[in-house]
Amino acid sequence: MTKQEAATWAARASTNCMEVSRLAEIETYFNLTRAEANALHSAAVTALVDARVSA
Image 1 (spheres, helix red, strand yellow):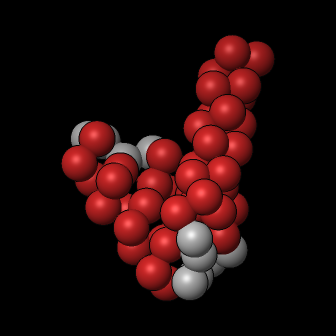
Image 2: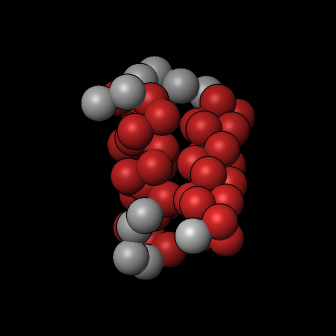
């Protein structure tokens, strides 16, 4: 799983608590800073929203 795929996995979580937990897992697994994890998450959320809007 790439960093981008992991961020999308986190963004697709069904609850906010699960999303936060997944972000922490990504941060630890990929040895990211909080800012790096947040940037990946933001990009994933934006991509998901854009995909829904254009569908």
